[in-house]
Length: 398
Image (cartoon, rainbow, N blue to C red; front, side, top):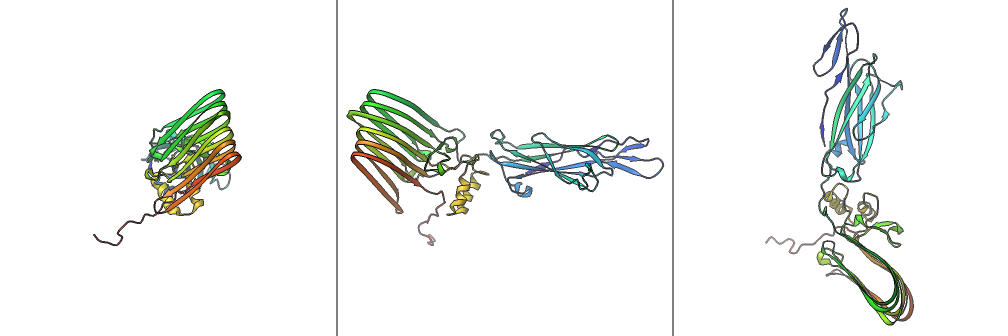
């Protein structure tokens, strides 16, 4: 954090029938012709900033991100030899509030007093990639009604985002369908950056009602939805959200498949979820979801965020705190799942696969044929703790 002083201490003179001289540095002193008494008045302000709960000294090497709180402290002292009143601290960005310092509560800034003011500023998106400059001024009045003032500048550095692109992709489709006839629906989304592969298709002929929403965001912080089994039913950030309600009946079976996959090759979980059906009648209410990316704007930048995950190890509570967005919304990175309530006549089933080479292999498959009512929930979740990779040939010099 860089601090620069402006407006060197200044003061206006007291009106006496005396000789007035200007002291170098901007102060004023009054010499009385009948004696050696010298009087001078001045006021001094010092402005510092602290990021979050960190002290001003520790904040000097830190940067701020969108949503961070900067606490400004203003120390106002009287370095003259007369008391001052009507003290006001003015900041071009915030409204400072008096905290303490008026020891005798007489509303006069005495020579032995230092008054403390405080203000809090929340960093906005428009502040990013440039310095946040605060200009503070303090004014007061001497016993003869003349003004006294001083000023200071505080500069706080903001973060430059790393890792996530400033430009990002999004897609959304919402629709309601009601009618009789032939239906052919096909949707696919692939994004290697977040290790997402998603496809959904179905076709058939009969009476059908559909209400659905499919939403995708390359940056999870931008897509927020409520899911019963995630984050206590509160809002969570997601990369993919698919909500669908369907009622179908027909002589020709409605056939369909849904596939949600996160390849380990692209840094994903190595998990896959499939749903298949061929039914003459179905009533279903379903939500599918996926999130892979970390918070869009990690606290204090990506390097500090990654270090925090490394330090957290398997401390899941600490990881949860790190993963929350600036709006205090849970970001359950490395999460894939399905919630479904289903009544059908025909064949319906799911496959859930989680494989990590030489490490993990999970398979769960259920298939039903006949008249059934099924309520199902499937979730894959991995805490983003940094696994230590064992390098081959450890201890070999060559």
